[in-house]
Each structure stands twice: as structure tokens, then as C-alpha cells.
Image (cartoon, rainbow, N blue to C red):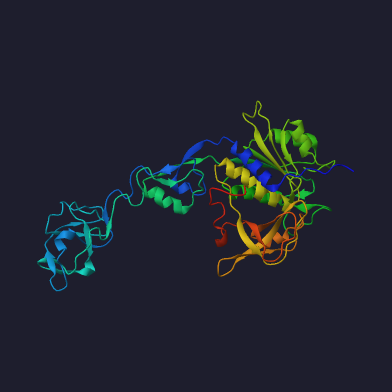
Length: 434
């Protein structure tokens, strides 16, 4: 009997994928703010000046000195002459003198000498001026300078995926461009002579043939993570052609789908060996996805640096799961993004565990009214079955060992960030498990 094969734990595989991605040298580039959504900041962005840069009014009303109105009451109102006006973008042409008031609009500069704003609705105007029937407190309705951002204060940190809400403070602080990491370029290679590409749903495929899945899904995943596809190349089941194609890869990262097993028609691992690739990992303790390979092509005349390679299984569901868990980890690290944090949810029904492998189960997650995540593992979990992916919105991570009862808490990896429950995915900067 042959000795048992070593299987790398999933967490270790994810950590290795991140190390491979972190080794990529992606230079920064400046992009205009409207084009920055989905890009990743290359460095911390700090405010050059305090924001707001001046004290302003929070209300339409009158700028006053609180001391001038200290004795104002409903029974004995105080009337102050109105000297000038401060409008948004047009400050008053004078400072506020003692015993006087200046009309002011919301957002307008607080005149020198004023320390409080009294809203219009609390003022009785007459030919004599503005009548005040209560004493305002100093600082009332005054927006102090620098209360939003101090000069040098952080606006966004390095490794932040820019979303539209980040543009508000960036543009408010005067930035028109931001420095982002260059998008990683991924070379995707697709094996399998049985795969038919571009055929419609009513096409009659040759015996034993299947529609292309990996060639559609993997490039789509790469782009959804804010990266670029350098090329997507279909490899024939031929060793020499596989060697030549991988040797000519132009991407920062190479992803190969299929051809990683031990059969006579699995040519990817022998091709990588022929190219002198370094093998860091082969086989992980994961279902689906055990025959996964991580390593790197060596630097050479056409490669100024080592090029990370992630070899995925061939079955489409296995490819999807390992891409979500490993390829994304490598690309996030390449962009300087922090590890994504799986959410936690409770199983709605028992989930079978494997003795020595983590199970990544396609699942549907719903949110109960109190905010609890309910995790339903779907039928159809075999690596060649695709229907469950059409109903899934997450992967439920079932640890190896004992079966998990209903109500057990498991890690949940969201698949669709547009789901409201999944917004926390990828938003943290530390991960206790990874």
C-alpha cells in the first residue's frame, strides 16, 4: 500500500496564495477620480489641508456675538442692527462689530468676531434690525474649521478598493486623481479537448463533448476582482503545445484550469516541470479542489521575475471554488488588499463533514429579521454538477472532522458582493484565522 498523500490545509494554501500574489511588483499609476471606482489605492491618501477649511454656518440666520444677547428673553428681546450679509462663496465684507448682527446663509463663512448663529425662525425682523428673544450659547450652529478632516488626516488607507462613497471625502479634500496599483494581468489557460467553445444551448455537441464553462467563468471572476485578463488560451491535450503556450504567457499571474491530475492526458504538471517551475504545493485538503497546484515559473530572458502559477482542477465547480478561495487571495495580496473576512452563519440543517478535508459547500444564505445569517447547504455538491451554483450566493466552509448539526456556526464566503448581507466581505484589515 502506498503511503498517504500529503494534503495542505486550506488555510495554509490561502496563506501561500497570498504570499505568491504579494511578491508581484505592480507599480502605482494615477487615475482620475471618476475612473478610480474598483481600483485599489497604492498608498495612504491624507488631507493636505483641514476640511472644512473655514468656520461656516449650519443654518440660515444671523451671525452674532453671544455676549451681546446674554440678557435677551421673550419678555425683553434685544434688537441688533444688521450690517452686512455672508453668503455661500461670498463672505461678508467686514468683521462683526459689537452690538451688531450679520445676515448669513448655510455654508457661508462665519464673519470675524461672530461666535454664534441664530436661525431665522427664532428672529423677529423689523426696520430696526433683528430681534432676539433668547440668549444663544457660544458656538451655536457654528461648524468649526477642521472638524471633518485635520490636515494630514487619513482619508483612505492603502489597499482600499475604491467605491463611490470614497470619492466624496477625496473630492471634498480637493483630490482630482488618486494613486492606485496597476491592475494585475492574468493569463488563463484552459485544457480539455472535450470542451466546445461558443456553441449555443441548442447545439448538438459531438459524443462526449461539453460546453465551455471555465473559459467563461474564470475570466469573469478575474475582471470582477478588479484585474485584467492578459489572454485566455485553449490548450489542446498535447504536452509540447502546453509547454509552448505556458512559456509564452504574458500575464503577471498564470492560472491553468485542468490537466493537474496524474492521467496520461494530464499534461500541465509535466509541462511546468519542463519549464523549470518551482512547486510550492500540490493537493490541498479541500473538497472540491484537491488536485490544486501552486508555484512559480522562474525568471528568465523573457521573464524579469518569477511568475506565480496557480493550477486549478478541471471540473467547473472545483475550478470555481478554488478560484474564489485561492486566485482571489493571490490577486488581493498583489493589490495590497487585506485578507477578506468570511462571515459567520448558522446551518439550517445538518451538514456532513469529511474526515480529513475541508468541504466548501455551495449554499444559499438568507438574513433573518434579527440579522442572523441562515446558511442552507444546497443539493448537487459533486464537482461536475453546476446547477447549485445558479442558486447559491455563498460557500459554506464545513471543517474536517465531525458532522455539523443544524444551528452550528460555520464560515461563509459570499459569492455576490451586491447582496446586502455580504457587504462586510473584503472590508476588514485583519483576519484572526488567515
